[in-house]
Image (cartoon, rainbow, N blue to C red; front, side, top):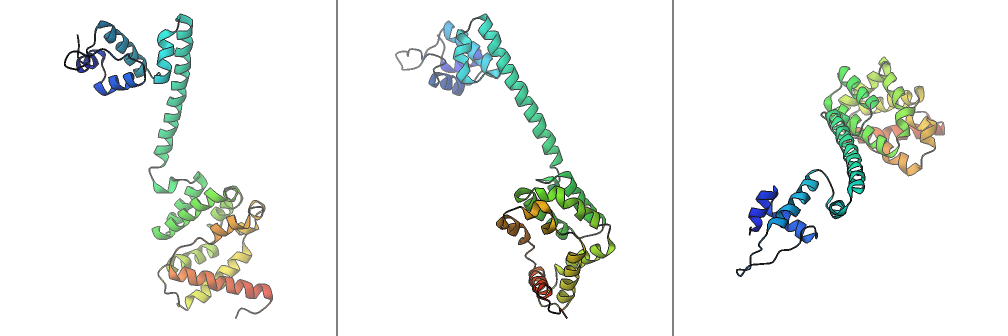
Length: 251
């Protein structure tokens, strides 16, 4: 007679696995000797070896009893089903590995290729990594809550990076990350921002964005860096836009 550890060793599994098979009803509990220890015989080795072989082949524990009791045809059909399930899981794992490869750089996390292309272009133009990271997080947010902006506005945004005046304004934004909130240059940048906003198609002008609930648009448009100068700039730009709409001068 064998101890539980000897049984596990002969069948190629762990003692813990044997206990799990007992708990799941796959392997009958044996009798105990005078000392209270489980003792196993030849049939237990046979039964456990079959269970371990099926388990290592990928058969779910819940399906093992049916496979052990199945006839030849039922057994083949069960194996084919399990094989198909394993093939699907392998495909999924390959897909995950491919995704993981794409995520080796933070820019690719949650972003489509066109967005990562935009970030690459900003780096080529010499923008600071701090500015690029702000842009990256903005597009992650936009992609999550308003994915229509990817097709409707991102190509426009990418094309604008060939516009010298537009890029000039963005460069000032980059510099402004380190300005004080009362820096006099903020007024000048606010005016330039307003002019650029009137000159080019902005996200809010696109059809897909206009159809979104206001609260969804607000969560994206309200997101920005916590740089004090940018917050002051945002406030000043809104004030200038209100003045423009009401017909007052902005000088």
